[in-house]
Picture 1 (cartoon, rainbow, N blue to C red):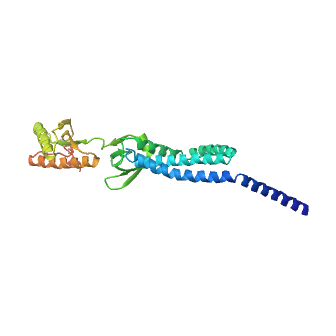
Picture 2 (picture 1 turned 180 degrees about the vertical axis):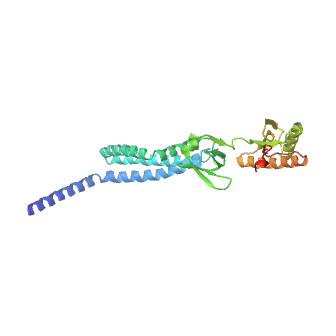
Picture 3 (picture 1 turned 30 degrees about the horizontal axis):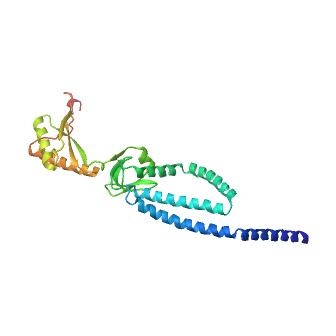
Length: 290
């Protein structure tokens, strides 16, 4: 028993001595590797600041600038790590790390497909010039002002001041209506008048009312007035005109203003906007059966 203990103790001392000798021999490499790694960390911070300065005047979104700066910083650190492993003569360890990183990356990629899709979609959206901070957009049945674009979702503020977070993937894959890409928007208003109305007079009155209710309307682009159908209770028409606007909220306000003005004009000229009427045809002997 004592011999086994002595033998084990002797082997342990030999191993410790071997490690100590290796440490002493490789001490210059360890010191050099530590200095290189510290320099790499400092360099990565400098690269991040330099990237922010270079991208400050670019048209990229803030989130995209942050992503680029972080990616360059990580790239610098990984490059420095490879140098450190080379200085320490750990090429076999480097190969093992790369193989393990490949397997781990595959597993993580399969587990986070949705998150990675949103991340890459966020990067693409940051490059698209048709959607940026402050734009009024409509996407996935939500409309509002774009206040943020990150690697997960596009954040829009609705007219009721509520925030909606739409995953980047859905925004990229579905149609986007951007009211801010043009300086003008068209207002479309539908209504109906009584069958006894003078249709030419109604047309001229509506056009005159819209021209007097909005500035610059009808100067650059014509006000369109069209009768669309003979309805059940009215002759229906549609009028279209342009306003200076970059949001759907302004379009709704203009539509409300036009409705109020047209209703006042119709009331002043005894023009009736009929509501649906149902006529019941009863047999002559109806009351006898009661």
